[in-house]
Amino acid sequence: MLNARLYMAQRLSAMIMIPLVFGHLAVMIYAIQGGLTTAEILGRTKGSVTWFLFYGTFVAAVSVHAAIGVRVIIHETFSLKGKWLEATTWLIGALLLIMGARAVLEVTFA
Amino acid sequence: MTEARANMMISVWRGMGSTGKFETFEVPAQDNQTVLDVVTWIQQAADPSLSYRYACRVGMCGSCAMMVNGQPRWTCRTHVKRVLRDNQIEIAPLRNLPVIKDLATDMDPFFDKWVKAGGVHRASRSRDMPIQEVKPDTAQRQAADNGIECINCAVCYAACDTVSSNRDYLGPAALQRAWTLFNDEKVVDKQAVLDAVSGSGGCHNCHTQGSCTKFCPNDLDPLGSIAGLKRETAKSFFRRGSKQC
Image (cartoon, rainbow over all chains, first blue to last red; front, side, top):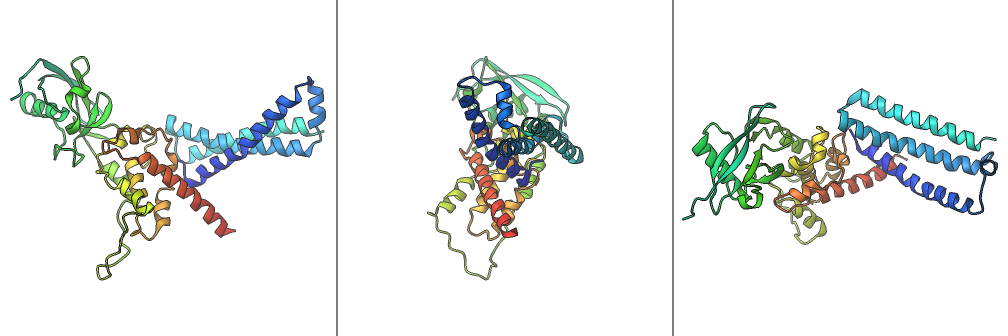
């Protein structure tokens, strides 16, 4: 159910997520110190290639990481195997990627 | 001579295959008595049709492992005083294995996985070659030595929740065997050992809950062995990746 390739994909995607989560939290805490409106936030993120890459990478890593994690839960809880398990993993990954990409594009595209 | 005391109430699993129920027996309590003694008393004095498995009775063979009050144990090395609760004990066949009858389980899935994990020794020298010198004090040899006392009692296998929920998972004993082979300098093809535990039921399915190490009656550390395999397979993953580039 979880081979070495999937295991490594999940660990490596976690390693990518860790600094991005801390970066997100640090910027969030720093940015709101003087009070910040939604318009001001969007003013900084829209059209920014840096924030697009920052959150885009995060969304891609989350899609890989969570899809594999949920795959394990589904297999162990419902005994789903084979083609159906593969399809479910890809579906969850694609769903997260599409939803995340929509959010990133909304925030970063001018 | 030990003096008989009040009777204990012993619930024993009875049944064939996946069907069955607990049956309670009144067993005389003795000063010195193991759970295996209790099962033997029931079979000899109360119900000769009770099926169970044992051989050495001294913790050498690993045949008599059963679930005692829901926990896997060698019944021959478990004193009744340690497990008696409200004058009762519940004895069931080992978890995670098909039941043949009563307390006797079918060990085939356990040993099949042991072989699948590459547990069979593959000689790297012929009988005509000189015997390979093995230095006992190297770190690698000591890592191998830590696992070789496993007697395949399947207590760790019964204790493992991952085995319960993931039937393809090779289990702690088989993976520990693979770890001893990986650290054995007589084994030449280390990559074959890693490949055998990197498949869909391999070491990467372990959730690191640690029941295997907690319940091992020989105080071995299958959890540490599995962690070692994960480390080595990760290194192998990068080595192979860099070769392909």
